[in-house]
Length: 395
Image (cartoon, rainbow, N blue to C red):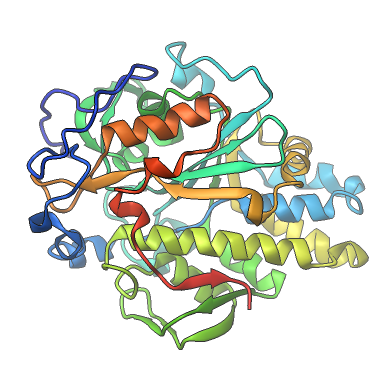
């Protein structure tokens, strides 16, 4: 694949103080985007091209929730489920040039959704040169394991991608101005982890990735997820059509929702991120409200699907480890989960991309490094948190 030639890196070095944003329309890191580079352009000219590579927009919360629900009644069967899990040894590929781990009991997990069209996923379009990390969320669990922050990284964010190990052998050169979701395509999950660590200064303790064919089946087996829409949504690209009101989304419709872009907000990927975040909260509500422990057979079917749906780093790819992680997350309710989008602005040089707001992004990553809540001031000028989808969890 080809890459644009880069100028000097504009992403702050991990842990270094970030200079104030100039705030001028012509500066890509300014706090206020120029009206000439606003939302309509970001969602527009490449609509057809990007439509061919839309993929999964969801995380591993469903998997963890189902494993937790099944923990009490299915301990005997866990060894049979281990063979379902796909583990990837990323340690050697990440090397030693990494941020230090957090020593206060908090942890960081990179949640990924790729747009692979391999196998059963081919029904959603042609594979355009390999999978990309089209959904990436940094899950920070605080030291009490009672609260969490989730930071979504827009797939079209321009970042400094470090040199990565090539999954086929050798290395992939770094790029000063690379599109974030290309990191997965050129170097797999290890390269995406390394890219996130480079831009955030946070060490990723684990990663989890979800396959969206299994995700559909999992939602169906859960009986669907309830969401409420303030207004009708219609997106011909994702084929989602919803009237305003409350809906119980089964697997196919749930996938349509988290793939929807044109029917909400400004038509960009930023609105779709908001849909993903709303759906995750609805999913947590659903998993938390189901009395599955009274139906061991049903719970086993769900756990079987869940473990077939997820892949993880090899340190986490066992049912015991996943169950332990799920128990750690048990106390985190949707009301104790702060979900935000990395502060970004539209790139005046390339209207199909966004750039991190340097000073604001620095606030976000610094808060997580110190295990503090993300300050509201960090996102008040970001175009990423201004999309209004009108979708909420539950009925």
